[in-house]
Length: 397
Image (cartoon, rainbow, N blue to C red; front, side, top):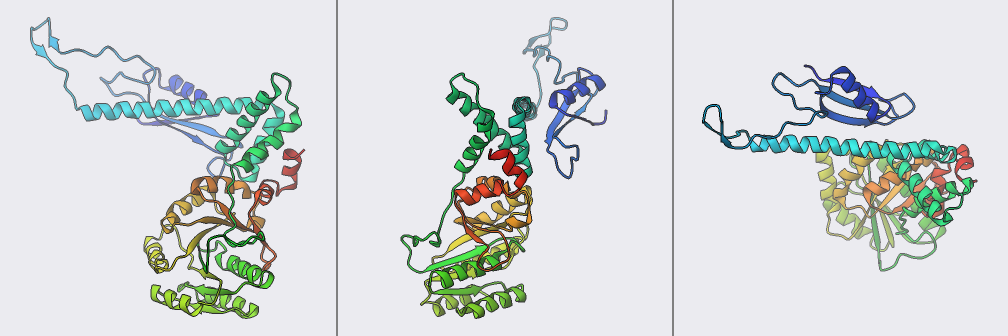
């Protein structure tokens, strides 16, 4: 029988459809949870189960108890010695497959129970929805709301929890997960343990690396009076080189282009009197392995430098995850989150930071140089969740 897909609003309902359509001998092949998005316009998560009816002679299923295994021995009807045969690898693979399905079913059941608990309370439901609209993933939003409820209930000691406290507790838990860094001393304290700083900014095409470097250079040079130099190793976009050169000319700071590893070493030598050297790199598709290897070679000049991964707030969550994974070969020290002014879902940074396991150093929220550059701290990260006025009403009562 051909594989059939059953869709419902819960995993239990989808499995019930399987049993109703195919019967108790149905074999479940896979299950999945589809969150709200392009592939799911229904306004809430849906669940799918792929199942089929067993072929003739195969009566095992997810819903019927398997018959007892026959043991090696003598067949009383013929006196023949019989031994169960079969490929042990295939048997073990089948067991692992069924265990994986059962594990996923249990996880989905747990998630469904958490969601039911959230839906029972109008206040927590409102906050949960607010987090989703802000860009927090479904799983993270559900976990943090459930944990906030548990903490408040524990602190209340059996007393009723005031409904207006849940929002503040959720924000406290979210911000508590955030790690920040100030590698350039923008908060007023110079970075410790560093002489000359060489910092390379890497990331996908269009993530905002060049503009971020211009903002940072202006902040360091014009406001803090530090000696700053700029280098561009973007050999693919002449416009990017000209753009950074123009910024350098306006500010009156040195600029040197570099097109190879040797050029980078030479450029660093020319800027030896600079306290901070900011290196712009070519935008890399995380799917373009050859160019990524080329960038890795250029930055591996032997000169100590820090790498900072620039991710745009408008990047989808799955793409951001792939970007983080692919650029990890360059050993980034911090994340730079850009273009938060171009989306209402900037709180997706919580999931990106968790995936990268890196602190957040800088946030950009506009095109102005250098005004639209923010040093990452708890307050600025909190603003990512409360960037929408309607969200502030729900979360910060």
